[in-house]
Length: 425
View (cartoon, rainbow, N blue to C red):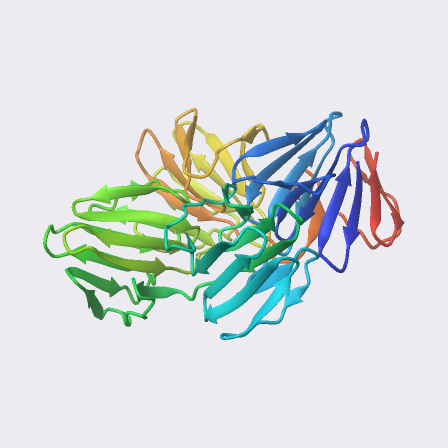
């Protein structure tokens, strides 16, 4: 495979050895060689000719060609609220200002609110925080990797916080990223104060923040239903994990919880018609079933019942979990899950799989719950995703793209051809 990097846009172009099939990995998604945006949810894969693209986490993609050669590409996804044009250039907007990209006008109406209007089809799209509506105020439900078309405009949610708007006539594109602060807001976007171990109230819902873990508990006084939202997911009042992935919802009593993206949830109380949004910081590392952080850095690791957890590297990006009674081991890192033999286990976000007597549940792109089916002990492992662009081999080792020397990985030779092009043979 040939991999080239564009410093200006931060994108990677990958071309297969056995064909001219090409994919382009950009900070705002994946396109084929014709520039067509490909919707690819976290945990799923797609094929472009002889090239397979897997999307294990928000900013990481694994590209494999027909020969079985694979590379891992990590891009720097947008992390701040703002707008980019189709070339990845920042559009300077502040609340109350607007600009034009081709036939589309873009205005920032508030801190987290943007309106896009396509003149040619008279189509309007409003992005407000994590929600999307049309010009009439109708909600448009788009989960990560999905797209919807309104008039002549296609809306594609390429990341949890980023939507790409494409004008079907001109092909012009803009990417809008809205990153919400952690905490709780009501349905009007107002912050609900919930300082540690104190409470805030919205209708019948009482919201309490735990001072130790930062988790937020929401209790509906009319039904007694209670849910807790943490950096690693959602639990009910009995501590049972509620499996949700972005775009999914579940009802507990009168309360419906919807996961909007990896760190944002809405909680709707049917009895009062009130909605709150809970945004929690994603916690990396290992926690037990009660949310307590575990130190797995020692040579012996750390033990939770029948489970032994070990940190496999110095950076805290890879953890192994072993069940003592069966000696079954799974390893979790930034590119996914492997069993004790090193085989990659495909676990899409929101799904579970069983390896011998171990169940692995993928809560979202970077969070996994590992539980023993024998002892029912469980731990939650959240691996940090790289925050800088890079290319790694299939074992997660970074390939130095600036050395100017040949690098051998197994039977593969990686050579730097010029500043922006790498050949893998």
